[in-house]
Length: 245
Image 1 (tube, one colour):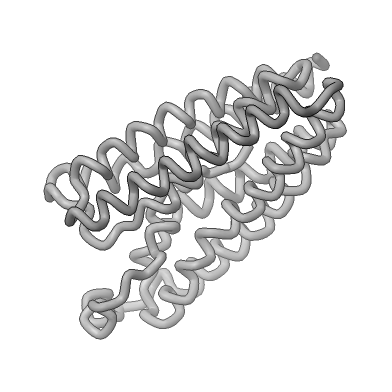
Image 2 (image 1 turned 30 degrees about the vertical axis):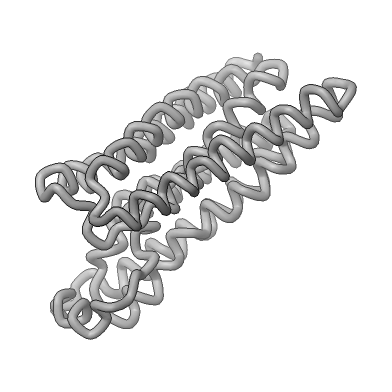
C-alpha cells in the first residue's frame, strides 16, 4: 500500500472512531435516567448493519485492512449501544420493536448477503463489486439520515437535536475517506463518502444559522409530545455512521 494512502487511511480511522464513540454522552444520559426516552433504535440498528457490511467488504478486498479494522471497532460499539438500548427501553413495545429490527437487518439481511456472496457468486472481483455496491447504497442512506433532524431544527429554531460535533465529524469523515477512495480508485468508498461530506456541510450550515437561537426546545417538545420524531438520527453516532468509512 502506498504510504500516502496508508497515512490518509489511518487519519480516516481515527476520525471514524470519533464518530463511532460520539453517542457515548447520549447513552450516558440514558443510563443515568434509566430510560431511552424518545430516542429511536433504528439509526443504531442501521449503523450496525452498515459496519458489518463494510467489515465484510474490507476483509474480502485485498489491502482492505484499514476499512476492516475501523468497521470492526464500529460494529462492537454499535452492538454495545443496542444492548443498552434493549436494557433501558422506555417500554416493552420499544424493546420488542428493537429486537425485531436487529433480527431482521443485522442478523437476517447481513446473513443473506454473506451467504449469497459466499456460495452463489464465483470470482473475487464479482464478489467485491456486489458487496461494495450494497455498502455504497446503504452508506449514502446512512449519511443522509441525520438530515431528518434539520426539519426539527428549522421548526423549533433550536440545535439541541443536531449536535455540532456529530455533524462536524461526519463532514470531516466523509472528506477524508473520499480522498482515500480517490487515491485507491475505489468508487464504492468514494461515492458515499463524497455524498457524506456534502451532506455534513449542509448540516454545519444549518447549525451555524440556528446556533444562537434563544427559543426553548421544551416549548416545541410540548407541541409535539405525541410524535416519535426521528431526531435520534442527529443524536446518534449514527450512525454509523458510516458512518461510513
